[in-house]
Length: 198
Length: 212
Image (tube, rainbow over all chains, first blue to last red):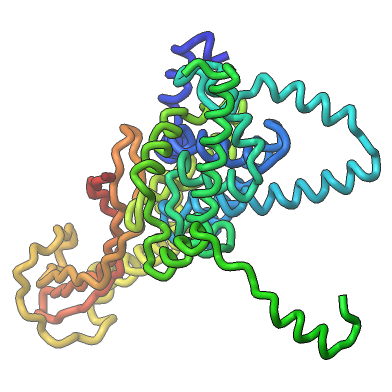
């Protein structure tokens, strides 16, 4: 609705309290990379949105109750860790459900829907490159891709990544190297196959 | 293979673990040196090319959902500055001036009035005279009572407390400062007797604050 009427959006924003405006700005700045991480951690776009929202709710409850240790700088680390934990919980629940229902058709439906939800901004790259990069990240072992997503697009240090994943920063760096190398190979072979024009 | 345990053992001893490949050796050396977390120029170049792909922006519906989640939560800019939601703008004032406090203030004023008026009008000997007060440089408040004349007035500052940041209607942040006084007044009647009166008082002051 706001997209079709920019003035309506501006009018709404001007009535926000300073805190609400600051939160919205924070979400617009950091939300895309956190959602990307949630996408990498979950099976589909809808799950990613739910997990991200739940992680934010947990942060907000902690901040509101005064239990949160650290300032704004620590919010992202907390959300990364919480997204990962919630995604693992969700994955376990889904596995149990799938075993119970053997619901293959639902998975296929989710895959179809996800085709329209790109991980990356449409305006910053051409479709084929973006698609290949996304495919490459999805094909990587998760322990490599999660480090790459956090390091490249989340601007996290190896120490911060290690803390989020419960590994040493050296292990995080090693996984990052392996992952970069594998991703580079994927993009090179796509280029050789003619799937990439650059 | 020979089934004799003794000869089997000696045969196994002839086998050696595979030597470490060069990449693992380099990795171990880098870990020992503390340089494992440093990226090569080639790795940095590839990393930079990946960064040119921006994550997709938040979908509008999700952005609104998340904004709703945070709507009533104060935003911590840093350790000292906190942005409050509009709904809680007046909260500190309300919190520090509860109804019982206002009632107590009214009761105190009434008690003072009841104390001073009879003395002045009908019972000048109701209270025992106090020690003569020394003149105070502070300006005494005006007293319409012709029998009791203010001899001195001392505004005793007892406490100053920062109550946090509040936002006024013009969206300007202000520090809310609570100042507590213990006012002390000396009154004198026509015969020269003095009466000491003490009154606690709290003021709230808004001081413009800087947010960044």
